[in-house]
Length: 250
Image 1: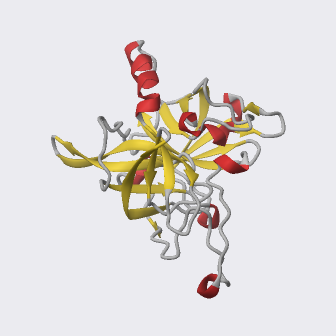
Image 2: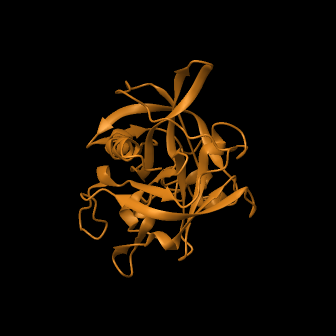
Image 3: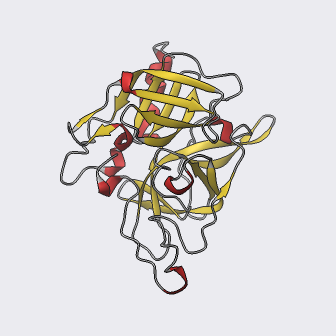
């Protein structure tokens, strides 16, 4: 689906007690991931992004017509180009082959600094904004972007459609931000292939109580054995979303 270095891919060699079930890239021996209800908040704002080439990733609804995901999810390694918007599909409430809404994509925006075909792609620019051809269902509320810098130790969550459980939404509820590294947010959430583009969620105060906001989108896994994965900060694409909003675009 993508260049190996960017698809939450690192070498993970199992040994000892894990010889029968090799560890997945980005997932620790404790594997805190658990199934979540794709129709309950905040998980109902997480979508499955599919391509006509059978590629699968995760995304987050951040506007009635807007989804953010990882840029490498949209890259075709054969043509060495990004896929056209007409090749992309967004599925809401996906669970075991069923979903509440299928929406096509009208427009795609990626960071000009991100070139997956490069020998050394800029991972901190690995994001994409999808403009939907129709508004999201009312059952899926858009998630706000997190504002401001988050200190190390901030509790976060990360969910997505992992390769080993691709038919259900899985999430790590009990993880933390580790800090920033090379323009990326480092965190210890268990996540592997397929979770790319999934939102790194942080609690945010709201008028009616606490909610969740998007601190970044998951893009890469670091070498083990300790889990150290990476997300592109939402600040990287916040300006584009604000510009579209000011221009009256959906």
